[in-house]
Structures are given as C-alpha cells and as structure tokens.
Image 1 (cartoon, rainbow, N blue to C red):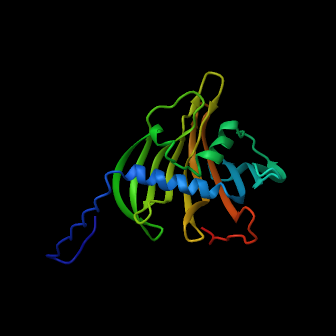
Image 2: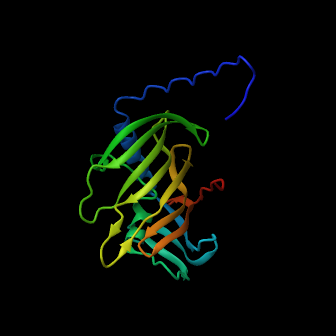
Image 3: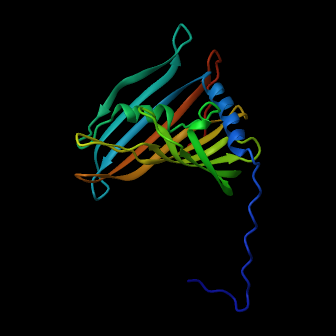
Length: 240
C-alpha cells in the first residue's frame, strides 16, 4: 500500500498500440532473414552450467568453449576449444541439452517453423531501450523427437526482429527410468552491422523438480566473436 497527495488522481496507462494482424508472419519472415544471415557467420560459444545446493553454493560445473566455423569445404561445423571442464556431481549434460543450446536458446521462429506454433498477442512494451511487440508462443503439438520453444518474445516494432525471448525448451522428458528436465531461460540479442539481431547472451537460474528432490541450476551462454565468413573484421558487443 502506498500513499500520495490528497485529492491526487491516478493517470490511466495509455492503451497499447494496435499490432499488425499478421504480426507472427512478419516476425517469422524477419527471423528467416536473420537465420540466413547468421548462417554466414562464425562465432564462439561459451557455456557454463552450474548445479547449486540449497544455500546457493556451487556443487559442480560443466564448462566448455566451442567455435562454430566452416570447414575447408564451406560446410558448417563445430570445434571444441581445449577440453571441457566437468565437475558435475548430481546432474549430467544430455543430448537434448546440447540440442537446445544449438536450436532453442537462440530460437529462430522461421517461416518454415511457424506452423509448429500457436501465438497470442500480449501488447507492447519497451525493453532494452527498444519499443517492442510482445508475443506469446506455444507449440501446437510436439512430435516424437522434437524440441520446441514455449514462452514470450519481444520484437522490434520497426523491423519485427526479436530483441529478447524468455521461456523454456519443451517437452520435459520423464519416464520410469530417467528424468530429463530443462530450465527456464532468457536470451538477449543485439544488432550486427546495424541490420540483424543475433543472440549474444543466454542465462537461466531455475529450480528443477526432480523426484529425488529440488535441484537449482544456473546456466550462461555467451556468443562472441561474430565474423562473417571470408571477412577480416570481428564484431564485438557490449557485455550484457
């Protein structure tokens, strides 16, 4: 409860702008262009995944650096830098974790993927200094082996490029033999060459409800040293 000057009247918030009726398609079209542009770039990806005890102290960690590069045949490939650090005691990194790191945390809702999702307009908001449309995104259905995104995204009103996304990779994978759970995360994007927004930072701090007990985890992914294939200059971003 707050207090204010006697007789003061609260000013109503201005109504949100009216979004274009085809907003999801406009975002998906821009995402297709963003993906095509990013596919021409090399970059370094630094992952730190930490498990924590009930007091917030780290009990183990997985840490790796890898370069996403092109082979001599101009095919996209990955190269791990050095040897990953692995001190996790309670958890293990799974194939689905690495699949999410490649495809869900960066999240591109391209035109060929749009049919996988149902969307709902959630208004407009200024975030990271950019006036954005806010869109809720949810899978229509999840087929065997699919990894999809469930959450919110913020798209620049000017060009419909995604500025930020918050959500979770789905589905959670539960069976009698194993439990494979995934944290909620936020990914931040920044402009490259003044045109396309690429992911620069992903972070998660979540508590996963395993049957053996709650497990808090923390994850960061940094995407750095973006360089167009065949170019000499490396693009640097401000640290989030």
